[in-house]
Image (cartoon, rainbow, N blue to C red; front, side, top):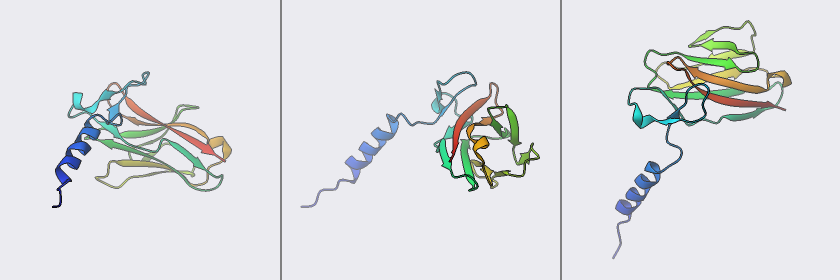
Length: 144
């Protein structure tokens, strides 16, 4: 007689998701502590991302930020070392042609692409959402 394991496996999977430390969170500037998404059903929140990226000099580097419940808010990319706003929405605020923003309409993903990074481009970048207070996710770029 074959046992049906689908129901116990489904329950185990649900328990793993509910108790997961990887639930989406959002954090305000100045704090590294997040608030679980469930506390605000309509607030934007970040979805999982690869926040540590290593790229060889001269090879493209992509930092991809995922945001759900964005609604009419904007996503900006900020370079932390000089607090330069690189992009807001699909608009570029830099004359440096190495930077591009990639976003498909309806997609929750916003990618800051560096076409040919140098060692000087290594550092911390922030994906920021125009909420009050602002929420952000930090990305760390290492150029080798």
